[in-house]
Image (cartoon, rainbow, N blue to C red; front, side, top):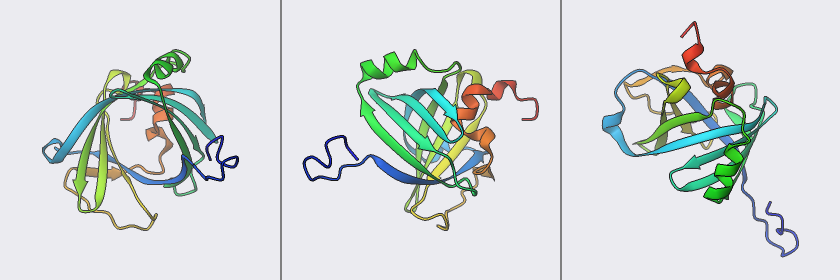
Length: 172
């Protein structure tokens, strides 16, 4: 709820339950992409019960707080607020080392939107597709480029990758 929500009788909120599944990408998805943009993000907290992220995406800044995932890894609380680019740049300076750098591609299949992240920097070589759902039991399409599901594998969380870069994994 916005800070002034109760005072003015409005219930503004930037909070929601995030329901998503994650997959490794093993094939060519770029031919199906309808857009792309670069992202750099850093973490002020990577505690598994709550992560605090600062993100620059194109010419926009955001601060996001995420709660712990449920036992399936698909659902968790998320609060996000747009912030100025200037503030985002300043907050990124306070973040833990190894910022996440990636290009996000948008791939629409039926009523689903896959966000395919091609990582660069210390996570070069990793490509992950995320699809947000309205319900954890939604049946999603499985294009030929979609690989193994890693929804409940914490190694593929961006907050984990910021502390344990993919380029340093021995068991890729």
